Length: 179
Image (cartoon, rainbow, N blue to C red; front, side):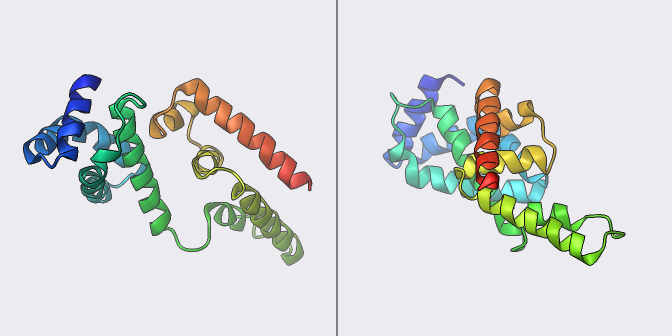
C-alpha cells in the first residue's frame, strides 16, 4: 500500500471516517499483526495488542503529520510500542537481566551468587539511563539473543541504525559501569 494512500486514509480517520478506518485496518493490519506477533511470540496476545493499536490509531490519527513521517513507519511505531508495553506488563517486577543472572551455576557459593546478582542490578540501573527503546534493544539483543536484523525489523529502523543504537548504548553502559 502506497504511503500517499495510507496518509489519505489517516487524514480521513482523523475526521472520524469509519469507512476509511475499516479500509486502513484491512490494508495495514497484517503488517502490524506481524510486528506484534514477532515481539510477543503469542498469537492471542498479538491479536489483543492489535485491537489496542487500532483504538490508539482511531484516537491519535489527528497527530500524524503527513510531511514529517512515513505513514507505515508511524503505524509500525505505534504497534511496536504497544507490543513492548504488553511485554513489559506481563513480566513480574524482577527484570530480565536479574533473571539471567539468577540462572548462575548453583555450585557457586552464596557470596559469589550475591555478587553476580548485584552486578545484574548495576547493569539494570545503567540501562535505565538509556532511552527506553535503546535499552529494550540492548536487552533483546544480549538477553534474548536477537540478531541486528531481527531488532531492526521489530523497531522498524534500518539495519545500520540498529547497529549504531547498540554500539552507542554499549559505550554508555560501559561508561556508567565504570563509575
